[in-house]
Length: 207
Image (tube, rainbow, N blue to C red; front, side, top):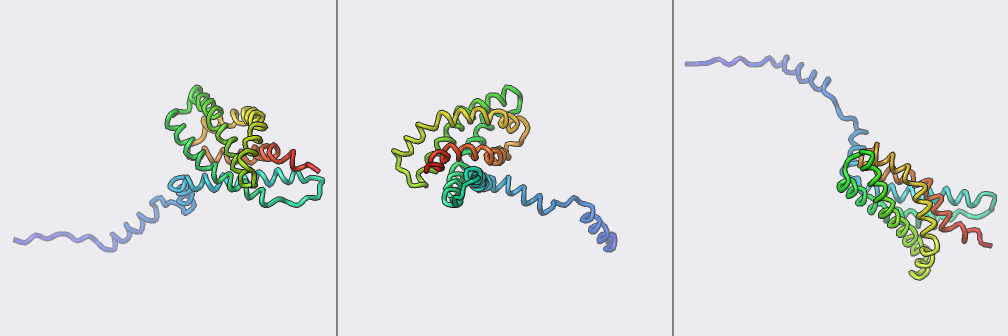
């Protein structure tokens, strides 16, 4: 006994195939790029971004300090800032991932808790690394680093407490955790202008 199976019309199948790919949503190449940048390569993004933006902030600070004065741009200083930012970037990356894991959510009290932890833990770590790494790269000894840090830490941390809480409220309340460090690094372009002036301003203008 034979059974006949009806074969599908090849022309009809071809039309359905073309129609499917013409109407199915396609992922734009740019979307794939950004999804990798803030997904698989997030640590690398935060590290490189931190280094570049710290160097940019220092360059702006140097332009301000050189205003009205004929002094050469110090490329080695901005290079030290870039390396310093590249050291700080992975630390910030790990800290904010841990912070969002320990204190999840974006409620008012949760955000305030995050800001408090950020100011009491991450802020001192950032200031410590900023002064130590940049000073060691600049050729200073550990004794000189300790002396500079003891002189400038309290003032810098008080400035930090005035600058960051409002910005971090926006960061913790409204942004996805993937963009924490990027947001901080962009804001750092302004903050590092102040930090660079604190670190280099006094000696930079010495006769």
